[in-house]
Image 1 (cartoon, rainbow, N blue to C red):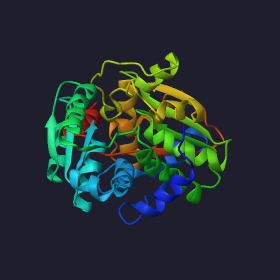
Image 2 (cartoon, one colour; image 1 turned 90 degrees about the horizontal axis):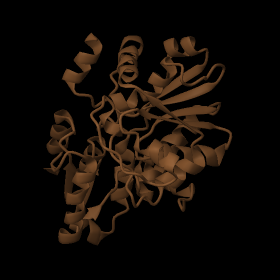
Image 3 (tube, rainbow, N blue to C red; image 1 turned 60 degrees about the vertical axis):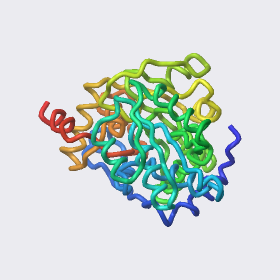
Length: 320
């Protein structure tokens, strides 16, 4: 694992001038429905609309002067690229973002608007990574992984520290699960404080790379599929160094939700909380509504990880 929890506290101090300390709000209707205290961490209120800004900012602030001059490259399903582009612009660092053709147009345009050089390559995150690796080797750009990077993991873990401060009674956290940077960082922070906190990862049924890797006991390749939870797509990397072991060691339970269940959760949150979530952020709510997770009597935190859903997709879901 090799990421001391102290790194998360240092990341919190480092990034605090540049990221939003997001609010924690009670989900009244969902709390009543589940007979539990359910509170939502609104990473949707970051300047980039998603939690990814934390890890990206921490990673860029850790660059030395030579690395800053060379610039950075990132592979992304959208939100990480936007976070890297934003943080790089704030620090005056060149950023190249490699995306696949599956990334929604609204996310592509948001990254371009931040001044990053956008490359659209192939039909999967793995194919886009080939271009990023080429840029690293041939142009000397510094790679910033969307999840498998100690500085990125520590940055995401600052969410866990804020949860401990705002919700000390917390005994269960439900986190969107993709490459494992978000849940790994949060679990590292929470378990260091209280090993009894139950950490649940939720992802979509379409190409659940981390879940399949956990079952195999090693990183496995998956075919990336279209999903409402597009931000959770892609593999975990066959050379995964950090997040698989973090998830193996610290995550207590993983769950899968269907496309219909994700759509219903987006709709439910909009109707009951008047909040817009992208599919990847709604998977925890989807698991609760589908009764795949029993939380009666518990103090639960849901991570609302992002709100960068395409308008046409949101309209289609809400009209369903």
